[in-house]
Image (tube, rainbow, N blue to C red; front, side, top):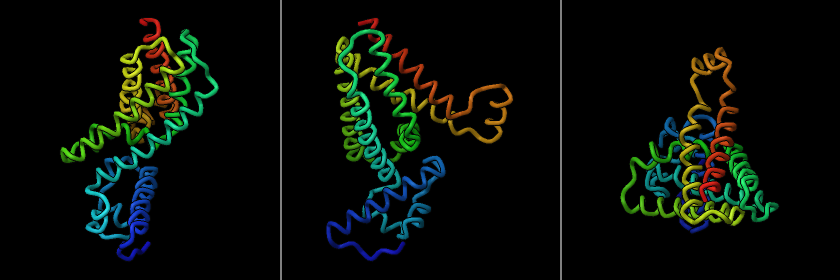
Length: 219
C-alpha cells in the first residue's frame, strides 16, 4: 500500500483509518506486546516517521483501537440487553452477567487489548495523553455500569461501577490463558483441562455471574 502525503482532512482521516485497520489485522495474528511500530509501519506502507504524523506513538495507535472496540462492544451489549426488562432478582442479575460475558468473550481482539492495557499500552504515554485515555476509559466504564444498573435497579451506583471494573479486571487476568505456548497448551490437554478459549469463556461467565449476583444479594 503506497500513500502520498495527506494534505486534506479527509486524506488524513483515510491514513488514520488505514493505520488502525492494519493494527487490528496484526492483532488477529499475535499479541499486542509482540507488534512493533516498525512492523506496523511496513505493513501499512509508510515510513515509521510518517506513521508518527498521525499518532504520537505505537501505544497511541493501539489505545485508539481499544477505544473504538470498547464503543462497538458496548453498542452490542446495549442491543443484547434490550430484551431484558428491569429485574432485581438473582435470576435477573445472572441473565445480565451472561450477556456481558458472552458478548465480551466473542470479541478476541478487544480481550487482547484489555489484557495489555495496563501492563503494556499505558506504560509509555505522557501525562496529557494519559488524561485523554483514562477519561475515555471512565466514560466506557460508566456506560457499562448504567446499562447494568438499568436492568438490575437494586444495585447502587457504586456497586454497578464495581461490577464494570470487575469485567475489565477478570478479562485482563483470564485472557493470557487463551494464548498459551504450544508446550503449555499440550500439558493442559494432557491434564484434561478445557481448551484455552473455553477456559476464558467459562471463566468470564462464572466469574461475572458470581460477581453480579453477589452484589445483588449484598444490596
